[in-house]
Image 1: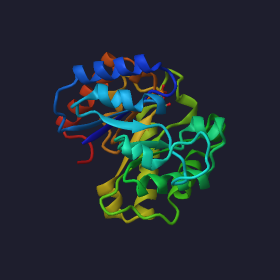
Image 2: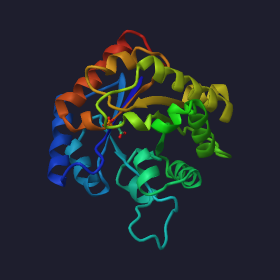
Image 3: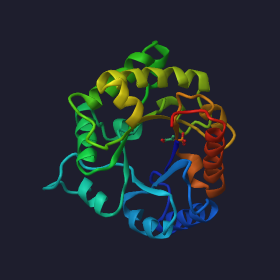
Image 4: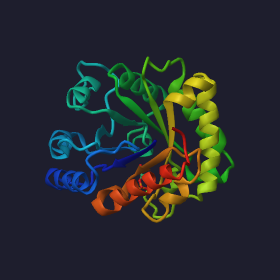
Length: 261
Ligand code: PEP
């Protein structure tokens, strides 16, 4: 089953986010047994988006969470609040947070742990910058980021982890990396997960998805690769027809038998 996640970032008003959620829910079938679909609005829009999704199979996600459970952390939002709101998965370590607010490996690891503690699925983002890629450091950076985020952590019973490979230099650029090139990073991430947990645990409970300028025209080429378990979509998730076309492409790829079960 593929995982398709829309990251709405800070692009919408609450009214726009609510309308988008309604449009996505209306355009998709009432049951989606063959694909997992999530949307991640900003904190302020979580509740109205949840209501707008109604009984739709689209899952509610968040874009971040606080690394601490509770306390004097002005401006932060805790994992338990998110869980209370019905949030099922949470993006952690997005490159925009690594660069704009200087999130480091230790903080990202604490957030992954916090998500697990609150029974949410962490969507851990990793990926190299253009400079790192040019220096031939892609493999090293990706492996290091995954290891650092998971160091000493166990997957909780029935817990799940999604790792999103997002080459920083293609995010929002309009041009995705070559799917074959992305597949190489996915292979490295999968092997790192197999080593960090166990091969069986990693293969059963971890998904590795691609993010970076995915749209309805290029998504099929990514999902045709069995090592790519889904996509994280930024810009193209802001249009209901575009996003639902991506979901339909994932369902079609699954029907063809590509990908992990
Ligand atoms: C993202 O920011 O996670 C992302 C994948 O953005 P875009 O699809 O716009 O490149």
